[in-house]
Image 1 (cartoon, rainbow, N blue to C red):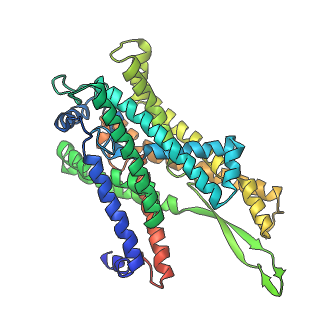
Image 2: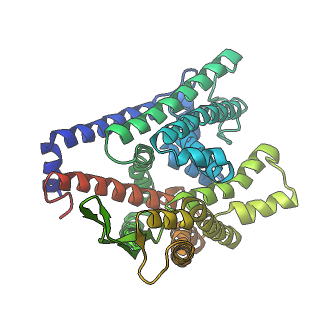
Image 3: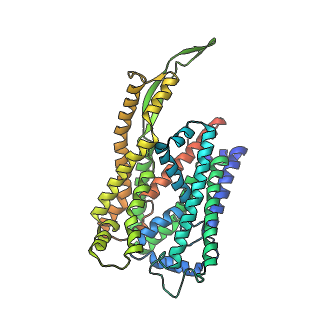
Length: 439
């Protein structure tokens, strides 16, 4: 494996890109551990240790997963990359609803630059909103519930201090957005995905240590074996695709003959990626957040039912609803991101056709038929991978999921980002007449 890395560092351009990525990741992790001004880092660390063992450990585990532990520590990069991801998803959804965004998308590079500008503006607004909400919850003692009263997270709750923390976190989110765009532009891979990958990977040693200390070496070894099996299965499905043959007709342009080639249109089994799991996870944790903010400490029947069925990850209700939401969001996301009619028009414009299928609407209907058929196993695969930790909880008596690394969303993000980055390195090495990254 180390010998495969040698060609990367022998190539000046590729070496520069890899070093840029590594340098930005180091800066990102440094900012994720740097406390914001006015935050008592010692008290925050002690509070996190206490709440991670309580009843709300799963909510805090989800929060920590995407921020790499930065959010609960109220660090400079506490908001992280999530405002940009949320803004990107909102803009993508608006392309289906608002014709103006759809027109911009079809204008090429100029339209894409305008869409990126709108995404940045929306990111700043969302970062300001999220940082204000988090600081307000921290000042009221609702961010880390169960924290001792004599160890406040914010020793000084005056207005000026709160404004400084909000401005710091918002500026940190903007810097993280710039980091991600810098990696995408001058480095290798998708910048936003790599930053999420870095945050998740930073938690794995601590999670493994918790399992080893609390469950012993035998359970830790079984978890490692299960992780390897799941990784192999995820890589196998992520690489799976349906290749639809496409034939291009010959055409004369001046004295030259163009076309006449055969290629294929690849449709991945998991076209939606990890987005449906993120949507479903966020939606399922909303009831817990509502209970914390509205009915904290209440013993009403509806509060007890929500806590026992929707909030409890070992509950059959939670597992069924989680699985159903993932399937729904998979079909929904594929429907808004892949337009069969648009693909059919592009093929027709360049003289391409699927053998045995007429160009135009029949081609669009055929693509839609194939897409619907491969989306079903893709959605089932996402649902099964996501609920595996919950099934382990049901068999293990309902302990916390916070000590289950590589579970659900985490393993999907790690595998998808690693495969995408490896493919980009492989393609750049192949352009320089090397054997490639993986032999």
